[in-house]
Image 1 (cartoon, rainbow, N blue to C red):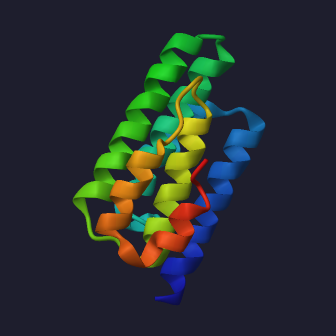
Image 2: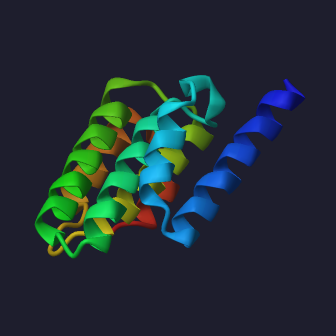
Image 3: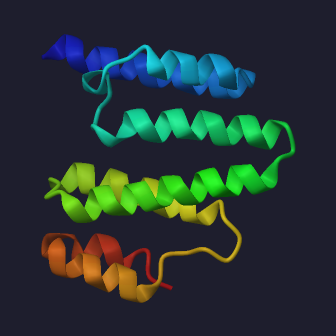
Length: 134
């Protein structure tokens, strides 16, 4: 079990390094070579893969394709959160990732209504979700 947590940390470190170095093609190839179990949470593989795609579009100044990719990532993450019963830590990380994604898009934030609907599904996360209300 300890090796699994170390492996996830090493994977995360390599992802951050590839992003910092601007090696986006290498990044999505690296993600493709991994298993879902190599990540802290199952959604992270697709999220990181698609993030490399979005960053690659951005590096080519293709903001239309970048935004389409970010919107798809946000939609996939909303579906993941709504269709699964996540434990607190995973829910908080997934929701924080979602909030970050929507912040990358023009005029696209999570509405108070969307946040309130999540409070119904995740009532123990009310205080956490209230932090994101505006």
